[in-house]
Image (cartoon, rainbow, N blue to C red; front, side, top):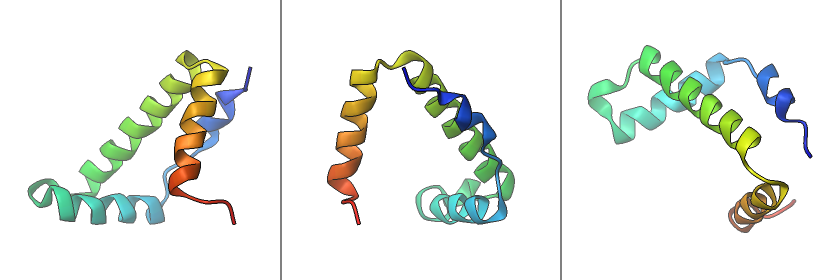
Length: 74
């Protein structure tokens, strides 16, 4: 099985916070604050981490295949 502990190495950075803040400005302008953007990113990090622990290798392969359909290899 894949070692998803490497996902824990991710640290929030200004670029990601700015990107999340821009997203919030579009989809939830009333709550578009840096604090909300950080909370949003931390929520996603937790969700992805949980998926990594609960998903089977087959589930992860299907998820990657979906991703590949939207983001072709270069």
